[in-house]
Amino acid sequence: MTETPLILWFRRDLRLGDQPMLAAAVATGRPLLPVFVLDPETEALGAAPKWRLGLGIDHFADRLAGVGSRLTLRRGPALAVLRALVAETGAGGVWWSRLYDPVSVARDSAVKAALKAEGLEARSFAGHLLHEPWEIETGQGGFYRVFTPFWTALRGRPVPAPQPAPVALRGPSAWPASDRLADWRLGAAMNRGAAVVGAHVRVGEDRARARLGDFLDRIAPDYAETRDFPAIDGTSRLSEPLTYGEIGIREVWHAGFRAMEMGARGAGAFLRELAWREFSYHLLHHTPQITSANWRPEWDRFPWAGDSPEVDRWRRGQTGEPFVDAAMREMYVTGTMHNRARMIVASYLTKHLLTHWRLGQDWFADCLTDWDPAANAMGWQWVAGSGPDAAPYFRIFNPATQAQKFDPEGRYRRRYLDKASPEARSFFDAVPRSWGLRPDQPAPPPLVDLARGRALALAAYADARA
Image 1: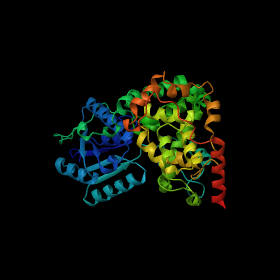
Image 2 (image 1 turned 30 degrees about the horizontal axis):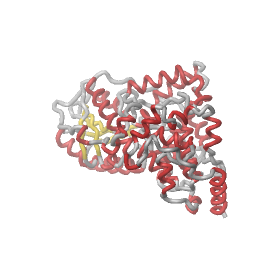
Image 3 (image 1 turned 30 degrees about the vertical axis):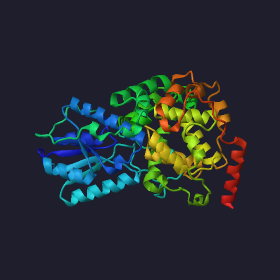
């Protein structure tokens, strides 16, 4: 078997280090054939994440070339593509790292069953999470519905040490033909926004590791105090590389744990945020409907509003609420949004505008370069009140008071709203021309009176409960 090639099907694991599937494959001594498949499930990604994925694929191909390998690109249904590659190369099996969203689980399960039925080796590996979602259980053998006891259980479990990156990969005697990445046009839907957002992305394993080191050295000591202030560089900004697997979560965890042991005050709070990511995947696995339906069924009778001109103003950063509009514009300029700002814009949409959280979830899935299926669903349902471990419905974020508390000097708002700011001007270069937005237009009036919007939301909640 040592001469029989092994296909390595890469997806959201675009790295060499802390890569269990790759480490196990190298240990076999077999020729390895790394592959990325642009299947219908991947083609369905929103504009920003698909564009950002393309950047990651391009960088990862260079990384593989640096260790004597190459990345074969193929387009089509995953099973058909993998079968064709097996026939072309004589490969004896296909390995991949697990994904956990319902669409990926359905695809991967079908691929594994079909390949095994044909006598091929089909193996899936951990690697996207600290622990597999089914490994952490309550005392009764069920899953956790509340974060705090989940966090207690998680932090008591040892996390495997990350494996180093291989220095060389053995390739097959002949490489199969590969598509050209440019022909896939993964960034087509970004249009002119790609040039703006491209100035803010940091692609690849080396940059992710450098950001982790900078965060732990410079930011982690004060992380617990600064993480909620969007004008401050006070977060790790690792959500994007974690989304595409450009850095391993076990590497991040162990580095954060070492920083905590060395006295970095905010490192413990950072580890807790990594646990929130784990919790969202724990819930995604056990309750996959969280991506598409109210996690709490009693919310099915809540009178959510549908799409509307008001929702369009929210999408376009034209609500007239400075904190909300600044946050939306940050997303169009940088591809990401500060976590505090995400909570505020989500609360405004679902509570002040009484709009279904699915509209916001879908918009984020189209516009965020760090879009994550579990975190996005969990975040929107948490804010809306329909999800697990949710804030009480009456906890309605007031964007004006939130701005006073978390942007007291107005620096964040000015950065994305003041026409003298480069970031504010970039917003008009990034958004679709069809929106008809220009820097010389006056600021929009408030879309809704905040006090009245809160009162209407509470009344709707009371009626739904009754």
